[in-house]
Length: 328
Image 1 (spheres, rainbow, N blue to C red):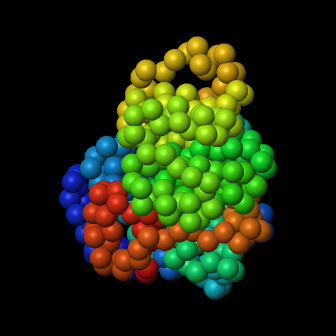
Image 2 (image 1 turned 135 degrees about the vertical axis):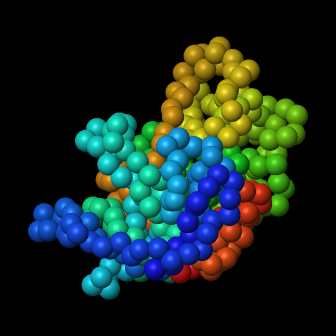
Image 3 (image 1 turned 90 degrees about the vertical axis):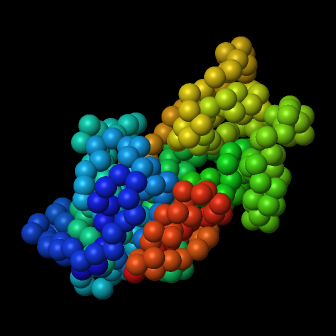
């Protein structure tokens, strides 16, 4: 079969022939075991670029990257692949055996993949394979942050930072579907405008001096904040919070948090959570939520598998609004 293979640090992915996975542990009557999926579409995440650059633990070569995928099982069933493997028994946090599909286990940038049988769910009928492939990692991350960690409720005010990325857009769509009022931040006026066209109440340019003070005055403060960056800007997110707010971050692209006033946190009774991916139950609940509300993932551009390096370059540049997908 053909696959995109990472063969070295900072090297382009090699489009080459590799051995097709064989199912030596087929699914049994209990639902355990493995299945082989013919991948119809896969999607990129920043994780793939970070691995390519060597900015990730446990990197090995060669590796087939890709955490997101949708396709068909050997009996023709259309499925979405859950990239969260070996979460464990405790819903509060992942086990020591936990891993994300695409490293160390070969991922979805290939014509076929073998995954645990419990890691596939039927594809919602209203989604194409390309749309379905955009859902897994980012959708799961957003779902756990919003519903498990922050426990959002209809009517609450939600702020989502860095709109345009996959998780942020799912957080916007999920929060709107849950009946929340949503605002966003971005350094791009165009991205803010696109978020408003999707249903956001408004947005703030985080590079504007005093934006959090303006947001607090205009909205009365946010009940929930979803963030991916941390860094020095995290303090402004806290300043924009209402009393009793919950803040959840799932990434730290801007590095260590600094300048945070503890007085604001304890006086306003603000809760701060970290979150990574999610459990099998959360993945299944997320897909059911998407199906019930007929949510359609935002796809920025579709590439062929052979042209996957162009998709990786665009992901690295960070100019996309929505997911970058490989059609296989």
